[in-house]
Amino acid sequence: MTNTPVGEEALSVSGSLPCTFGQWLLFAVILAANISMLDNYRRAVPQDRTLMVQDFLGYYTAAKLPRHEMYDIDRQKEVQTALLGKPYDLPSKVLLFNHPPVLIPLVNLISTDDYLKSYWRWAVVLSTICLLCAGAVYLLLRDAGQPTSTASLAAFTALLFYPLYRSVQAGQDTPFVLVGALIWALCLTRKRDGAAGLALALTIIKPQLAIPLAAATFAASRRSFAWFAAAAAGLTALSVLYVGAGGALTLVEDIRLSADGEAFGVFFTRQYNFAGLLARLGAGKTVAGVAGWCAFAAAVVCLALRRRGASDPPRLGLAVIVSIFFSPNLHFHDIALLLLPMAMLARGLKARYAPLVFVPLSPVIILAVGWTLAAYCMQAAYAFALARCKAFNARS
Image (cartoon, rainbow, N blue to C red; front, side):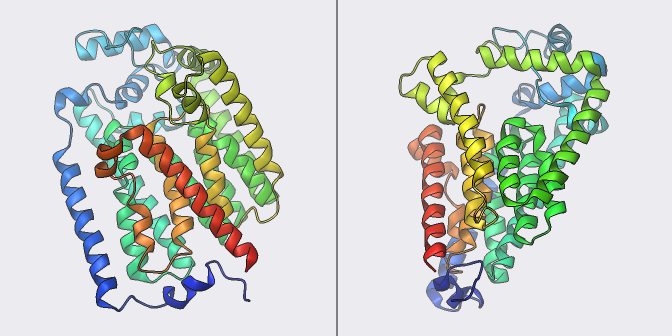
């Protein structure tokens, strides 16, 4: 049997356009659902008073402060209290900004004294990055032989993925991490190792996700890992220079403080990772925390050592799911990274079914079963499907 990027069964149809009435009807239904979802998103745009307490407030605060004071909690509190007219509604009285400063120069560029206009400019930037994510999904499917119609509809459906929409709505930086991961996977499947490493460096915006993906890169391509390490080191050095050594140390302390309690809005039992699952099952915070960090370390080691077939699409998809599930910190908008495993799974399906892979976790499903159950079920379902896909390729 020839070595192909998709399963033998998918090859019989993926190279040609769907032609039966049933196939076109399915595509029409998905397209109509997408248009309806897009209209729902348009009508769900937050009002001005709600925009004032979105996560973008933290980025805006950091951008308004001098660089050496960016992580000073008291100074952040002063800026937010002056902007809101009262302290932020958390026990700490502040929405803490505790992210690496990689994107702050960009936030600075689009920010003015008008917070609301700054928010909408940032939303445009994030929406543009989401379009790049959809483009990467399109290329991943086209590379596997999926027809243009299938890849286009799948990319459009991926663009409307609810956690990705929530990232834009909240003003979070998840789309930047997602586009880095998608381009990383695209370049690895195309054997462009250097470009893959450079793309992955963008994920250091969220180090808890970058580390396991870097381990998977080490297993897949040492050359790609070297490019990632160099680019990540460069970005880290620039970040330290930007905020100063004192600012970098304060960032570390802020991360420790926010991870240690709920006063800063990081709710331990509302995480969608392994530690959060243990907490929901009744484990105490200390037990769940220690077990979560141990599992994270074990996952990183396993990803780094698993060299055989490490660059195969199903394995790349599984690596992302492992990175998500065992991440020490995972909010709902970070579930947007499931788009990469979805794309890897859709590569091997019949053309008429590929767009359906991106439909789960829509608002309808979330309203039916709740955010928590939907998030965990999707992680499990895509891991199982990719494992079966990997087993099929191994037998082939």
